[in-house]
Structures are given as structure tokens and as C-alpha cells.
Length: 110
Image (cartoon, rainbow, N blue to C red; front, top):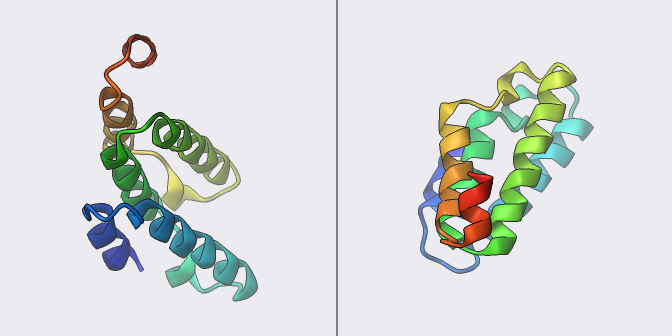
């Protein structure tokens, strides 16, 4: 899944974000249903692909979704999802999402 997500995250297709979010939602659902299938569990690389796609969208909605994603990553990590811990790339993608807005609010949030 991560290879597909990484490729989609670099796509200029306007539907890329929605497609990625649907895939990740499916991964989470299938992981919950197939207890123990680690290959279905979203990890930091998965979430970074989502964040990369959101950062490329350069919209306020995408920046807000980015914040929700990193909060979700923190929750997963605190519940034992050690492979969901935000890394340096995660934080740079959050900054990139807000940088793309080029607004006073975005500058203050960074």
C-alpha cells in the first residue's frame, strides 16, 4: 500500500488527496478486521504520504486536515502504535502545508 500511496502523494491529480484518504481508511478498517496483519497497519510512512499529498494541495482545508492527521498519529503512538510516531519529515510536511497558504495566519502557526 505504501508504494501506491507514495506515488499518489506526488500526483498532480486533483482527486489524489481523496483517493489516498480512502485507501488509508480502508487499510485501517482491514487491519482492525484482520487482527495481526501488520502489512495493513498504517505507519509513519503511510501518514507521511497523506501529509505530502495534503501539502501539495495548498488549501486551508488541506492544512487543517494535516493537523488532524498529526494529532491522529500522536493518538496512535500513545496507544502503542510505535510505528506511527511523527518524524522530522512529518513535521516538515505540516510546515509545507501552511507555507503553501502564504497567509498571516499560516506564518503565525509555523
